[in-house]
Length: 205
Ligand SMILES: C[S@@+](CC[C@H](N)C(=O)[O-])C[C@H]1O[C@@H](n2cnc3c(N)ncnc32)[C@H](O)[C@@H]1O
Image (cartoon, rainbow, N blue to C red; front, side, top):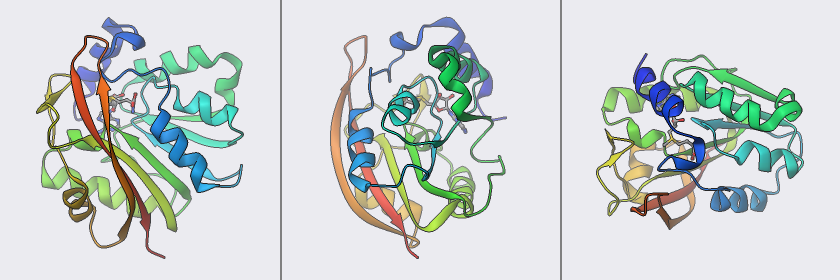
């Protein structure tokens, strides 16, 4: 199962707020999601959500159909403990996004911050894309954050594929229309600068 051992070790040896990608709130993601004006019962999946607080913030914003998927059980259990009783309102899925089977055409919004960029082989990217196309409704939204071209070549010690918005669009293929894109500088808790590309795509109906 991919790099599961790597991720389990990462999450079991450091607290969530010491991880390189940690940020107290995923502000760009939250703002872009709010600006979609989705109904409260929209089905939202955070792919590779890890221990991030996006699920907490989406619950607080009134979204009721949330799924967090991650390869690491440690990450999911850290997020669940933080959420306490609220964790029961969220569906937690442990698995690899390139192989897990998700309900077909059920998802209104697929969110991914810093997960797709770990898929450096074409075959892995194709499997991710097949899952995305299977799960996301036609007309559904994809909000994705990857390392930008000027970011370091590794994240969490693993090689990553860096993108600009055109390359990301080409990799995702003709089923997706680019709606907006932006860059955001992330500074890790250790002070390293990492430029992210954020992009919103819509699946063509
Ligand atoms: C850099 S972290 C980002 C976590 C979270 N999205 C955030 O922004 O805080 C990457 C996350 O993706 C998860 N991950 C890596 N490869 C994955 C895969 N193939 N399927 C599902 N999750 C994966 C890791 O366990 C980790 O939680």
